[in-house]
Length: 328
Image 1 (cartoon, helix red, strand yellow):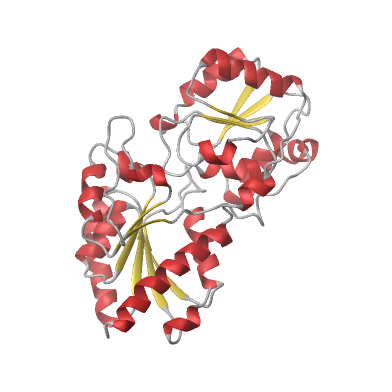
Image 2 (image 1 turned 30 degrees about the vertical axis):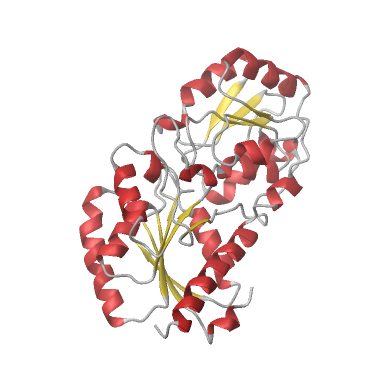
């Protein structure tokens, strides 16, 4: 990237309420990976974070308004629709908002996100699918010249292939077990843990689930599995399937988010609508093969965190270059 074309150091404020907690320690790590990639281009990034929850938005907006009044930022980049509203109401300009999925598809938050998308300088979705209807719900509005696809990719420094036996030993897992990994919190209904449990039972396998796994340990759990299963009703992007591919672990996924492109043509993976019989047949082939891996690293590399950060910096350049030409 060429941040020097922006006439000096660019200062960006990233606003997010993707904060980890004990139940979801992995939450928001993808935003932090993107921030580190952006900083690698010489962009100065400051973080404004606040916890999730409806009671947090008003005080966060007040704190953010005070921060913007006393400090200068070249632009503000918010992640998630309601965090974007906090930035909008605090007077952030120019404002980029990256929408991640639930904020577009949720029956209450979705309409608010679509309303916000018409007001900001750049509306970004983590995948093209967020700009299209899905499951009877509309997507983000298209605004020529003011919309973009800006994913948060996997950190290929963390997600790398590891010997399955070694990973299981490190985690204290049975080296001979038939293991499927559901990489989400089972309590999140749209992720459809019930489908994953049905698949494991039909495949004579044990189901491991994410949720409370520390980010640094997530690659071990993926590498320990025979396959990763993404049974979601919808995904904004679907980072889990890319993290699994980066470890060369087979993935079975519904056609949500990035999965159709990421998994298409990768021998040993499945991407299709939920069908217990078809899914269990594929899972059994993988499990019976005793840990056979796939060639997924190169595909995952197309969406690596560093490459996705490049796209974000390009968006910054376009916005700030335009502002500089206008003398703003």
